Amino acid sequence: MLVGFELKVMDKELEGNVIDETKSTLLLKTNGGIKRVIKDGNRFIVHMNNKEIKVDGKDVGMRPWEYAL
Image (cartoon, rainbow, N blue to C red; front, side):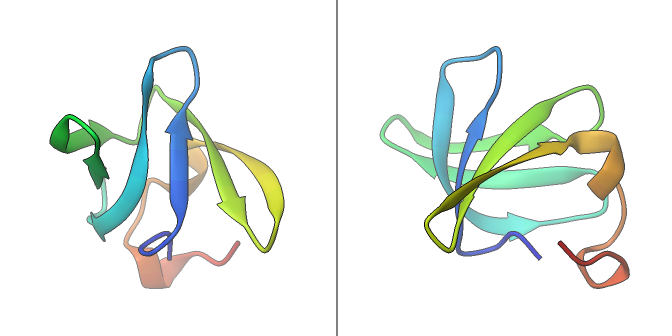
């Protein structure tokens, strides 16, 4: 589950804290407001436990409780 972690969308100038997650989207709280990002077709950098983890959106394209990072 990515909720609560800081996330950056690779190849786009978009980053923020994940505040909600569905099967196919992430909801980010950014400096520019709340943004919804589609998982499939995007790659992300997740800041988790003082590490940067690269995640392909298709690998987490399921309900949050159906995968584990």
